[in-house]
Image 1 (spheres, rainbow, N blue to C red):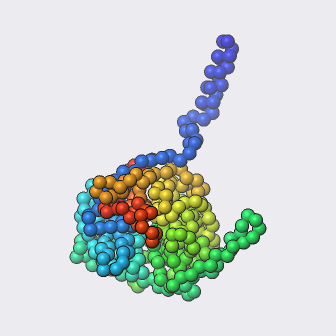
Image 2: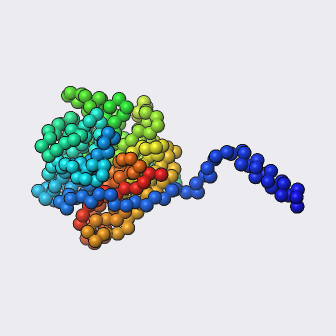
Image 3: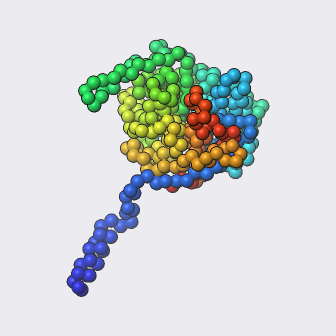
Length: 358
């Protein structure tokens, strides 16, 4: 017995010495609860874009109010303090907004309704001057070429896309040299604006047009959120309608599929080694490593509160980091023509959620 105990002790000791401080490999994604952070004013609906000012923690929210008639819309950009106090609003009326980004003391805004990139001072008020930075327009041809999809039985499908020529600017990201990359969800394109914080006038160039950037899926938005990972020459792209995360090598222009089955892959950001995706049709935020493996699952929809606002996540669209927290917009946008089939229809007050970063 003594020899057996000694052998076990030695074996355990050798095992411990062989891997000092090594954490056990997780068995699955880490799960994180999400809580309400900010309830928006009663006259503001459908928060979509989100950005933060790293200097003071101010949080910026843009809305995608696309109701008909257009006269009913009340699109705005709101500025909150790090403590959640509403500091300022800026009205955009009937023009829905998508992506927001902060750079060099300015807030950059993708005005979806006007197909423009615009900007405001970081500490804007309702009287601040709104600057036009760049205009986006119809591409020729308006739709990308068809895509051939191989089937397991040896046959093949051909997906044919259509587009009207409307520039559906949606996501954006700056690189380290302040070049701005912008996605076009309808025309299947990625644009580039060189030195976007200082160019005058600014020129929009097309970096890529590819069938992988378009969609024929249920969600009518193709190329969406954008992010750079560890390598500056690699751009990641969400395709919301195809439920995919794409990887683009900027030097060659080659696009490849990194991850599938990401329902409504919408907003995208890279933070602390993970690609964070707002999966709007699954009501979760997913953290993927650069191999495409889901490492974190944050949130779920927990019901409609007494004030009419969603609990947890409901159609999350964008994320932003402030301090130890990741904030999320609850777009809560009904999509189907049928009545009574979506919880989004029952929302009467809109909000932002947040969770503590792992």
